[in-house]
Length: 211
Image (spheres, rainbow, N blue to C red):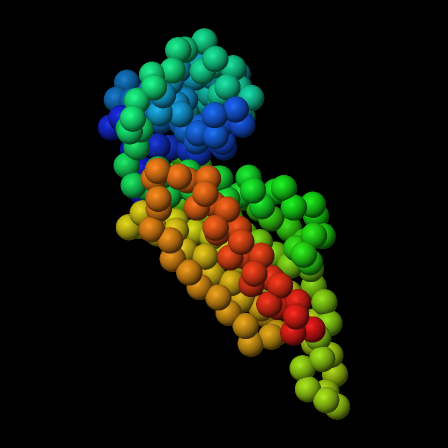
């Protein structure tokens, strides 16, 4: 479910390389070695420490941070090619990573958004990346002579099994919903991520206008 890079299955998405804008991923080869890659460079990740409380081959602790990945890849010359060695699911997860990066540019509380979180893949989870956008909880008067009800905006950006990206929005009190599916444009991930952010912001504005 996570996609493949150069034939190797992706086990974890780390984040975006801030300099090149490419997704940083962890793969594991047939020999059990962990590789960090962005599609142009690859490097073996050696465990930073051993978990002394456990025994066996899985007791190593790996550093999956963006900084550690960039440090390892900085020693490898990139192979610039016209097409990246990604399959459709990697492109879709790349789009989600780029969208999350853009959403974080909005300060906390902007547009009544309280929290933006990214659910990362883990080695023992088959789920794809997902963005959760949660609005600030507020009181809304639904009808005259009725007490106010508290509600908030909720949006989710998810990767589908077919490699598309879906945006779903709802308000927990107001009768407002939004849904849009994007076929990933592999030629311009950044432009499409801006399009998704604009769609989310428009839905947020629509909810705020009903207050």
